[in-house]
Every structure is written in structure tokens, then in C-alpha cells.
Image 1 (cartoon, rainbow, N blue to C red):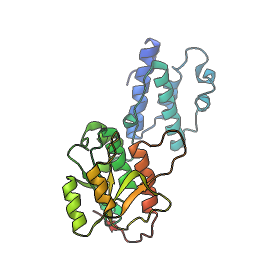
Image 2 (image 1 turned 90 degrees about the vertical axis):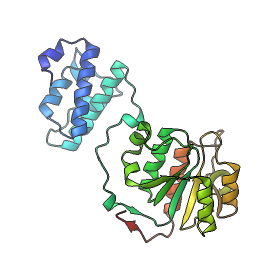
Image 3 (image 1 turned 180 degrees about the vertical axis):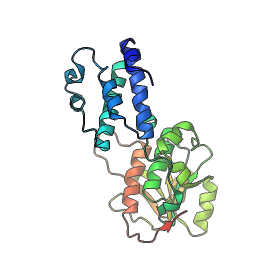
Image 4 (image 1 turned 120 degrees about the vertical axis):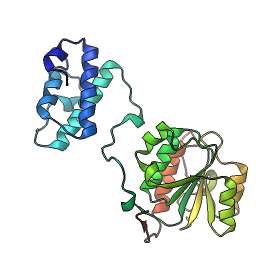
Length: 268
């Protein structure tokens, strides 16, 4: 911890970077020494202090009650992000602080038979985001094709926020999914040109096929879905006729999980 008087002598950019780094440590450990944080805040803006900040950051001009941890946590987070804008730091989604920590698989609930196959999803960020959504909506298992970005890629791990460790998943080929379909498992595709989301009859137990960002699902995957439960599509109304794959996945998963599902598998 650098003494306040020493910090005061640093050039502004260096001082702001040091303060932001210290604030990040408080957020990561969920410890908020109010007096120290307020002292650091006093080093922001050489003239006039925080009350001179522009209208985009009005919350910073009124320090919260030090007895309210949730308030000081939000204020600390806002101050840190303000400092980032001043020194030109742009955070990616996977750099955001996750205060939930590791997820307890023993407490996890999922819907039996709700499974996902990712075919050649190239972006680690999208893979991680899909895992996070899948865990949130009760997916039992995720199958990942060999040409997908690895779920263990650092960016996938960061965007998944602990959900890769919480979910059952394995590498699999489309042939493996085809064999599951032959054994009685239904298969459907998330793809444009299919049945509207509001009209699609979601199976209780099925593998949903999700394709790559650039090419969508392969002809073989679409043929497999068409021979089983079909295709589900999200109606859109703008000029862009498609969504980011992780965004589309979240919309479809919300609809699928809203069905008449009352039986959970727990503690997997």
C-alpha cells in the first residue's frame, strides 16, 4: 500500500493507475476500508476534488455511508472505472470483477436431457458466454466439436465466470450426436429459416445444435435436425437478419427453459 503523500507526488496518469489497481484489489477481496478509499478519492482531480466531475459521473460527487458495504462497493467500482477513462484503459468483458467466486456443483440444478452441441464456434468469448448461459438455464451437458474454440482457453474461462467447471461437457463429433439421435434422443437446430421461437414445440429432452459465427450449422447438422425435431428461429425486425451466436443462444435458452419442467437433476 503506497502512502497517500507519496501517491500525491506521482504524475497524474501514474497516480490514477496506482489508485485504480488498489481499488481493484478491494473489489476482488470484497474488503472496503472506507477511510483509505476516501483518501484515495481525494487524490482525484487536482482542483476541486470529486465535486468537479462532469455530469456523466454524478454518483462520485457524493461518497456513500461507510456503514453500507453495498453502497461503498458500487461507489468504489464507479471510481475505478472513471479512473480507467482518464488513463485510456478499456476493459473487456472478461476483465470484470466476479465476486461470486467458484460455483458449487453440489448445489447446481439442471433439466435432465437438456443438452447442447456446439459445432465449430470459433470465438473463445462466445464459447465462454454460451457456457455461462447454459449453466444459468439448467443445461445438463454441453458437447463441443473438435473445431470449436477450447472451453479452457483463458478468454473462454473468463467470460464463463466459473460455469465451465460447473457444467458437464466433453469433446464430441456430429457423428456422436447422430448416434444419440438413432438411440432415441431428439435433435433440433438453432438456425435462421426455421419455426418461429413463439411457435416452436421444444422437446423436454433433446440436443440443441448451435453453429459457428460465420457459417452457421453444417448441412449435415441441419439435415440431422430436420429429420428429428426441426429448426427454431428468432424473429428479427431490423436490417441485420442475425444475432451474435451467444446472444441468440441466450434468447432460445430462455424460451426452452420456460416449458413445463418440474423435475431437476441436482448436485451433479
